[in-house]
Image (tube, helix red, strand yellow):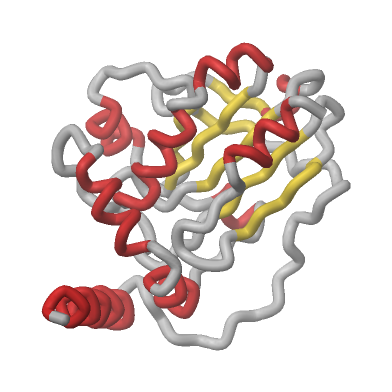
Length: 211
């Protein structure tokens, strides 16, 4: 009974924090034209965390996964990042390019990486130009929904995986999205998170790689 009360109290505190944060502005969301499956992926040219150019056009002929995270200080995102990195050998064997995009600054991302070289190409996008190009959501409602769909558990697990404390430098109400792109540059799966921490399953990624 005490454990249930504690969980409810934690949920209330988290929800209250979301609803009172300056990043959350209650407003009517305008209708957006989301990126659709079977369309050619919107191309972009951007710098990675080390200043090297990343041009989506250059990956034609390879399978690509784009994962839009929130920021490197987000524990839910940290859990997902580590989940994907555990599949690095498999992704490499299949020749898949993994692009990990964050609202974070390059400086904060370097602190997060601590000189590690992950399989994913790490892309800082603090001006959110790619988030706007791919029409990602910012939603307090989806944040709250995430609390009822395992986000608190994911937060706790993700916090344990941090090497040190990393500040959150993105929008607190940003919702993640992931895209699987085939060798012709066509999107085969466009997954906009229904709530915080809603991602494409590892099984579905492997099916994509083996198709």
